[in-house]
Amino acid sequence: MMKVLLVEDEPNVAGLINKGLTEQGYSITVAPDGSLGLELALNNSFDVIILDIMLPNMSGMELCRQLRQKKILTPILFLTALGTTENIVAGLNAGGDDYLLKPFKFAELEARLRSLYRRNQQLPKEDTVLRAGNLSIDLDAKLIYYAGEPVSLTSTEFRLLEFFIKNKNRVLSRIELLENVWGIDFNLGTNVVDVYVNYLRKKVDKDPEQKIIHTVIGMGYMLKI
Ligand code: CA
Image (cartoon, rainbow, N blue to C red):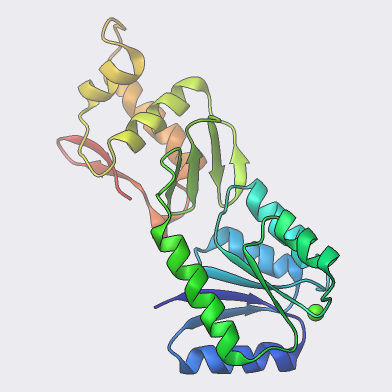
């Protein structure tokens, strides 16, 4: 089921789109203003975002810019009544993927959504930006985001998290973690691993509903994505 976030302040337009897409079997979340839209987009994962440009609190363009800055690359379809080339170009420059002029036919909206969805599914997955629940890790830029907010990790915490990510869904023993993150010659007890796993959990694994770092009793730890 395609999950769509609709950020639209005009109740009539929002209602029509919501009704039409729900009838077609989509799952729709509606936000009536820009800041709520941003919050929802940062804390949930959607397949496509439909974004009106003129919104209370924060414009659609600003919302789009902030999402892209935070490496959230969900396809964005702008809805705009302002049909000038200038506005369309500004929307696409802000990181939007497509646009539709109001008023539009519902069938066209749906066709655009399907096309954005397909295009996104076919893109080669960017392997330098990894996501796990609320967490995203840019391995190139060495940046971590939790629920869209940058998190500062010490270099040991970063190496530990990176090693977890590169070995996701595999049980890692404390010895293996110690050797790979601290170095084989580093003469520390394995409880340093437990201490650092707890640091990481406090910074990047705070949501009990979407836990990613699991303790495997008698064996070690596993990062599950
Ligand atoms: Ca509007």
